[in-house]
Amino acid sequence: MINNQLQFLSKTADILTNEFDSTRLTEELKSLLKEIISFKSLDIYIYDNVTNTMRDYINSWSIVEDRDDIYKSFESIKGQDFVINSKAYKLPTVISDITFKINSLYMPIVRDEKVFGLININFEDNTSINMNFLFLMKIFASQVSLKLQNILLNEQSKINVEFHDSMKNIAKIIETQYELNYIVPIIGEMLDRFITDHLIYVFLKCDNEYKLIWPKACKDERIYDALKQLTPETEYILTNNDKIGAFPLKSEEGEISGCIVARSTLDALSKRDISYLEQLTRQSAITINRANSYSRILQYATIDALTNLNNRRQFEHRLGQEIATTKRQNNPLCAMMIDIDFFKKVNDTYGHASGDAVLRGVASIIKSALRESDIPSRYGGEEFAVLLPYTHIQEAKIVGERLRKAIESSPIPVSIEDSDIKSINVTISMGLAEFNNKETGEELFERADKALYEAKESGRNRVCLA
Image 1 (spheres, rainbow, N blue to C red):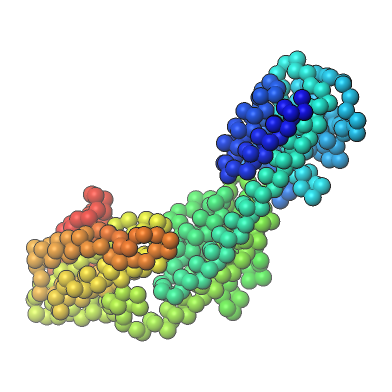
Image 2: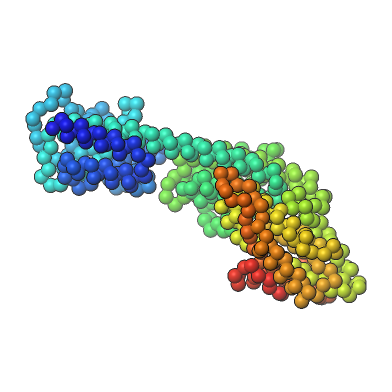
């Protein structure tokens, strides 16, 4: 008997030293337990003291609902060794030969003498156990407790590392970008990856109204109701049973410049989530405020800092000049709109530093493929605009195809940490339009932009004419 018990505990220790996922770990424990007794099920529940709920360890930490027996057992087992058939017991100091029938057994998962979870075994009908079995299960539960302590500590450490990485990455954005329409979606994506249980929305305040910047749509009117309640003194607002949280972005003067909103249809925001979101919102506000400052400084500059092409302001200035020249001299003029295909996937897969390298690489190829008289510009984000003076549409198509093929066939050097990848291949979609004397420069580029949309909708990596 003693040898069998020692073998069981030795095998348990062997299982618990492996880095199994929750499903595999539980299956291994079930298989081992079936060597000594028949039972129906084995489950592990962990108490979440932030939300005051039991979490199912096997089923992705989902909340356990409509199981009063679990919550009652959790309360009654404190200070006891077991809950057997719905009654709490403490083991005697002396083992007796008593046997009795059992339907269910709850064992405490303990850390620092405090119960933080339960192991639940439901048995086959008419199963009998003795005191030896209970002593064995007490040691078994202690072994499992140590394993789960380590798992929870590792999970929390991982979350802390991811949090500090998010803070650092949000702070680093401003090193290469200052356009809010580019920066804010990146911040939204970073927050969304970290706060995985809630949907994230980022708003900026324009003319005293909140404009959704990321993602593209928000149909929950309760979010807009929460935004209306924000004041400069507001730290954050929780609504809808704490399932919606609004965290204002504040300027250096203390005024509200926007808001980050977290929304869930399932769980309320925990104290931990709120703390993380407060800190991430503050870091986001600092980054956005710096971007605004840089934008004001650079609004009179002509060159885009990342790509060394004309910036959008200079492009619009040159567009006006070229339209006037074209009308006066009756020369042809074409407009080219370019978009890097699946650029978001580049950022998500390889990181934003690699995304910036791709933007610089594509800009360099565009510049080298054009004539001295052509006017390439970074239009915003991953879009480029090019003016082709003295060029008819069919000539522009030849230039566009040559440029498309050059980018498709040119690996762009990148540097990715902990990776052997040294370059990335990307493609572009392009829309072309030729100016007619009845339209404005804006209308010309609207037609080129529609052609670009057609190129993207019809499969990407192609040139379409307006």
